[in-house]
Length: 407
Image 1: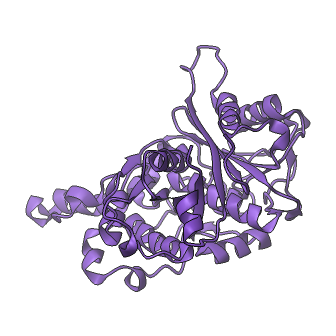
Image 2: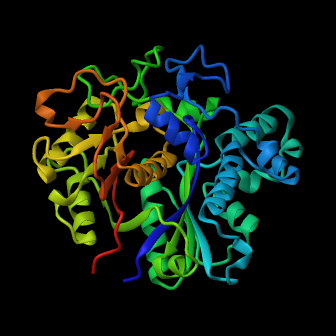
């Protein structure tokens, strides 16, 4: 039962580049949501996004890689660099097959794929880049990170939409238990382009409001959908013994994980989120009363918010645990969103402060939530639960602690 600890964070988010800047913006309530800037969205019904600003790929990615990578891969490569630097480890010092990569992704390099398809339709097949064969692929981040850092251990990719970031961390923990020493895990997504935007609009979950302060209001009586965004986080996950041997600072321990799938619509059966939370707590060997904070999935869709609130009441009781959703500052980042939530939860554990859920004014009493929303809340934090749900029924729960794993 090898303990899996997080020793490095690489964050690229609408709230800032790097974990420190993201955390500073999160505590200050500085939103990264605004009008779409990556393309002209004026003719679309949804015109707001959480975009990553100030990221110059040429400053972070070798010039030879720029023609063959999508925006999401460039951000992922930068995040992997920052995660290793934060963990104070040089990948070349690892054994040949000691380390691997597990990322999640929702749809791959949307923007790269759109550009090459436009060339195909307008100019013909001879004008399509050879890099299209992999730059769009949902596994591209895993491949490019492993090549960049020479990580030849067990690797993979998960496609479970917003739940993917947590599922990748769960898989990293499994790989450590099977013998790997270190795994880079997490997710970075980038759907903010016309092709990706059309796909997101088809899902019917985006808010059509134009005021960034009112568009994404999860658990609010006036919730009208979510704001989409780009970015995410990559984490260095290590065996506790190897981290201790090299004196690495530790953010926290991945103490429990679980994933479930919702039953068929119309079956009358309960959604799978409650079961995911209970299974993750059982895996961690703790009870609901030992949880200090929950980082909610926070869909921003009324019926989905109500379902999540019901799951939290069933596990923790009415107002039984502080709940927060700092993604109101970034929007929902597809698979990158839950990875960023995990990084934010680890920063909260380190600093003993719960970041606030902004923009939410009126939480229905029947939700029974102690939603942290009037600024950050100081608290003694030892255990956090992070939740995520992906489109079409994916659920994931992650338990993070400041202590070692329990048998």
